[in-house]
Length: 173
Image (tube, rainbow, N blue to C red):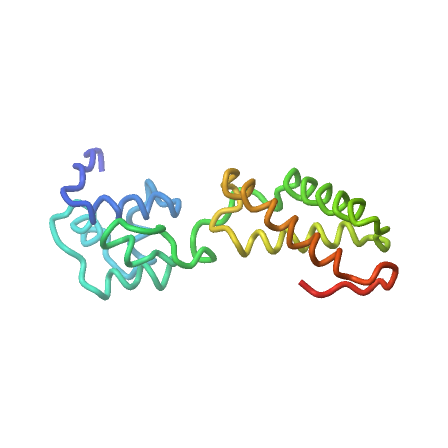
């Protein structure tokens, strides 16, 4: 166990190591191997590039961890095709982002000269947050989130502006 693993000889081997580490198994090759139905020595062969994994071994990465086979094989695209199977975000709701969306909703109501019903600002901010979650691969990517907030704001403003003032009826998003 005191041996330092030799570097991967192949790009595929490097991506296999990168995947294991991203999933939180940096120092736990045996535990990770078990999740994909391999023995620890076999996983080591694959990661070092001594052997090439077969389709069954690669498909276990996708099935068990949501890893994109395109990324795994070619290195192109995103590591995870199914973000729900990827590593969980390190924190819960981004409170600062939620407050920013709250302020955005409140400003749109003011611009449209509408008084929101009780709790509507909070509810609409939560809805924008959920829409944002559906639009981004990683809510922690500040640049992408910052670029999408104006889009969400404009869509929300269109929806509010087209609602009948005072009717309390707004179109569902």
